[in-house]
Amino acid sequence: MELSRRNALGVGGLAALGALLPACASSLPEADVSAAGFGEDASGTVRLWCRAATVTGVRQVVDAFNASQSDVVVEVTPVLDAQYVTKLATAIRGGNVPDIVDIDDINSMLFIYRDSFTDLTPLVQQLGFADRLNPGQLGLATRDGRHYGVPYIADNSALFYNTELFERVGIDPLQATQDVEGMLEAARAIGGLDEQTYGWTIEGNSPGILGFVVQPHVWAAGERNIVGEVGSQRGDVAGNDAVRRTFEFYQTMWEEELLPQGNFSGDGARWGADFREGRVGMIPANYSVAVLSADPEMQARTGVVLLPGPDGGRATFAGGDNLCIPRGAPNASGAWKFAKFALDLPQQANLPAGGYIPVRSDAATEEYRERFPLAVAPLEGIEGAYAPTTLAYNLLFNQADSPWGVAFRRAVFDGDLDGALEQGQRDFDRILEQAQL
Image (cartoon, rainbow, N blue to C red; front, side, top):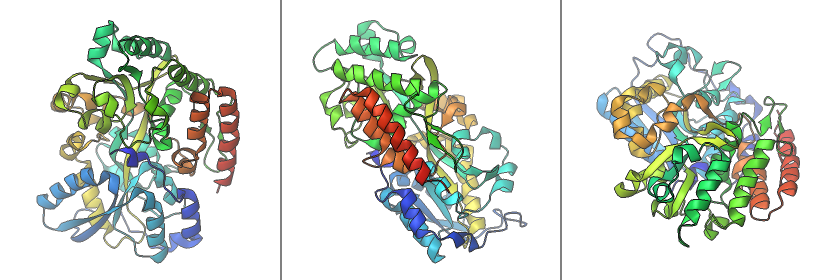
């Protein structure tokens, strides 16, 4: 169900955009966001494009907005994730753009670096809660200190665990999930309960999921696997101790049969089903997969922490969507009026009902904590939310032959850790060199 959030953009987002979006994209007019009444006195129709994967959460907010007033009507057009970058690039090239786009945050930079989105900096600065917005997501909409979008919904990775299985083996999950040594010990104990129970599960044949849930182990150690600014980036894989130890952790679990055999071919189609059935001790996933899709009994047996590094620390992938207004938007004022509504606390605090996490840290009220206890950890860890700023994310992580997925499989399933790291380094550097502006 949730695989599509991190799925490959079949045509390769960077290549498709480069081919479709001409250098003169910035010739589309930019709305005067400083005009009197901008975003306040708006009226008419607002055309919103959203990812098909997030349409449920988007419609939830759009319906509330349309019911709250009669001056502006938002019309939603879902676009398949695999086609989103291409369709938006084509619309920009043709000068017929939507008023606002709900775009995967990792793809925001593809358009920002081609001057395709409106500079919203003055509007963002006027928000009374700007300092409480998810910094990882806002960073993916920011270039040279200017904001070209705002975070809208967060989709964070975390480590969910089965409290009942931990109780059966007499291990404290909060202590065990602080580093890889503790997690491996817990996985061994839980996997030893019976032949149908496993310590851990992961979709080992889904590049997008592997990027979403494995990278945070590296970030929690204070390391990055992409270093440098856009324009002069390189990979840090072969000599990265956190990457090596993370891959070793998974390699050991596979060799010791602590992972289900189905993980080898798991492509995301049944992501989290084994955990929700109560047969797995731990799963790195998101709220929708581990909690929203589970029955109430399993939810009551679930705990959550952010993903740890090899020796400690915590991190989460700053996934989710940003709201951006394309240059040339016919009703940019109405678009911003909707964006502000979407960021209001009532809408943000209700996002877990649709499987997402708020982008505002102040949404973690007592009422929120009581209603969505398993959606608190990612929100409390909002300051540590991160995703790499790069124009090559899809090529590096999401596509079927992406270097990260290939390296993971070679290290974990083939047992060739050194070869995986060396090849990963070469592939990262090659792709990042090609992606420079």
